[in-house]
Length: 251
Image (cartoon, rainbow, N blue to C red):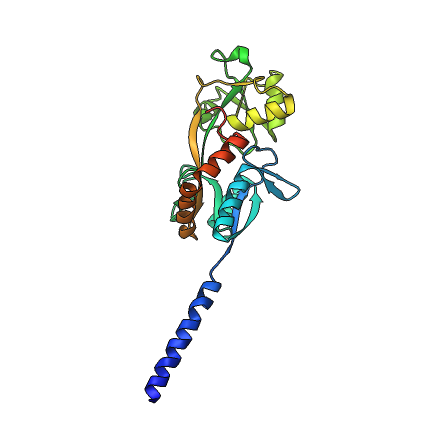
């Protein structure tokens, strides 16, 4: 009889422990993001507020799973350090090719792609297809990968700018021969700030990058799996957000 009572007590304790275990599962996560003040329609970080397409997608993901996401914004180099040191749970945007050497030794899991993008050179329309690139405008902190060898050879010099509005203005005023930038972002600021989305055009004849952006984590690979399923289950909602924000403009 004593043994039976002990067994019943153990079963009861075990059954009570199940909801308690689930109640302590981690629900709050930190996403490390870029602190760009001018990177709409993807994102904007101003007044300690992170807004734009990226946030809307991840807020929707959090809502479907009952999670809470905190967005911590850093300059690019610090963002990688925070991520690789384990101080943030996830990083967006990411790509396995970006800062690959820094990531060596980390088992980083990448999601399915969220958006496709083009980074290339914006020029005044009359120069399209016939521009002689001598001075290339870039956003400080960005790496113009297709031009690194030419820059190293000093065939091209770099003119850095802290924001898109300044970079585009330099290009419109012919102070640089072209602006290496994200095409969707350039078109957004051309329309918003200069009221003419065609004042500069993407020159596809020049070297450019066409790639994708991913969510990444090595601390929580299970979240990446959940995000992949979210992308499938909510593809219509995500497609509407893409269209609303025009994040794949120019593709």
